Image (cartoon, rainbow, N blue to C red; front, top):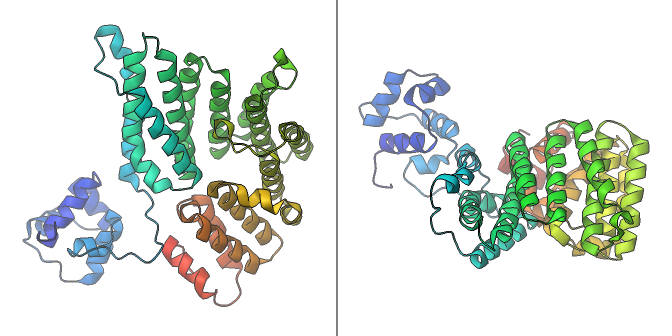
Length: 409
């Protein structure tokens, strides 16, 4: 594309963003005729201010419009844009499951290869590489759906359903992180039905946990509390006589998610009860684990205890909880969990007026897992709050982080 005139490059990126000339013109405050002339090269773009405005509307680096390589600062994170979100939406909106009723399904992908790809996707999520994962999700969704369709009537049907259930869950968690809450809810809801077909009741329970997380992100705290507690009660130790570590992990995470929902509605008594139950499960488990990609264990209980305190407006308690935490266990957690905790600590420190340390927590999270800080709307909100409370000029590292995130200083 380097050799194309700038008007053609504008047309190309407008097409990538799926904007009509009229929509593009409206967002620029120009006429459709003006856009058409620019794209055909009839009208020259000789003002840099206009080129920068076009780049902003198209959500691209201005250097791309000028036919040069995009500028990338060291450590710069490429978060996803709306085009990539729409590709995930399109994959979620497929209803190919009905096709085997009417015709023979095409040759499905090999399950071993799909299983490896899904394992890699989970690790990518837990290392907080959301941009990389989001760009891989459309194909992963299509492959998992094709496998579920192709193997549905064979002896591998439950295995294929299990894999598709996982992909829906990865999609839900990733979309929730990136602020696409309605899509996160859709993906989680899809996972429940598919996971039930897999014959794995724990996978179905984790799907319910994902639904609860999506509901909480949508501001539906009471339904989120009910979903988590209802399913947790069915998995409680002693119910059915089963106490496998995997079951304890899923049970504990449901309780922790329920505690976060209770904190959102200000029910501190329920928060204490649910965290106490999760703590008992973690003690019975004996160590931090990652069953069903839950990262459940004693350390994660402490992280949620601190996060719930922040939700309840008890920032000082959150900081005290962090200071009592087993630092060895904390450092052993995967990056997503730790960086998420740094956001919670930043919120807690801001609540008690310690904006300097709150800034340090955001910087620490950015050093550990940049996408967790730079790509998440909640982190943008926390940084904006910190900057608003900062007296004078923020430190150079904080100002640089704000610039990279597009947060006004």
